[in-house]
Image 1 (tube, rainbow, N blue to C red):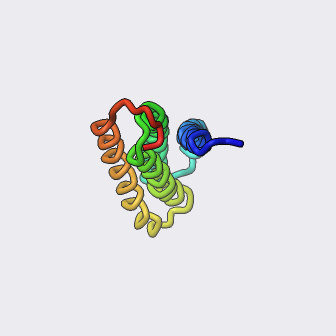
Image 2 (image 1 turned 90 degrees about the horizontal axis):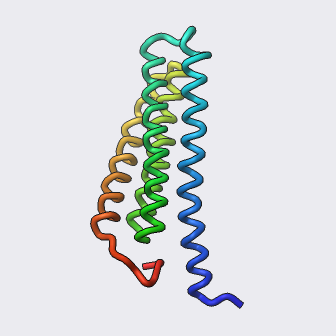
Length: 144
């Protein structure tokens, strides 16, 4: 029978792995999207929509790396802020990059209404990551 500490430790480890896996997945799909844009879309998308697609890729790749940083911070200095930062980055990529991909591929300008919400997710993620790092301290209990 597992103790509460063992169960809590396993749950913490699963959150760290989830952030790292999400970062790796977003990085891989960002590279694929960038290649797709450069080779398949460039010849038929108008310049403004191609620019939106490239912006989506750039922000996705940047925040994929930020997710890997969140996983490292969560592993090193466990906190709700570090986990919240990762959630903010994932939501940011889905809303910001996702809406720009949608606009680029469909030309629907109404998708631009969602883009600032993703930007807010990015900003919240960066602020929470700063909080997690500034308030960090070595812990004996990794679940604070």
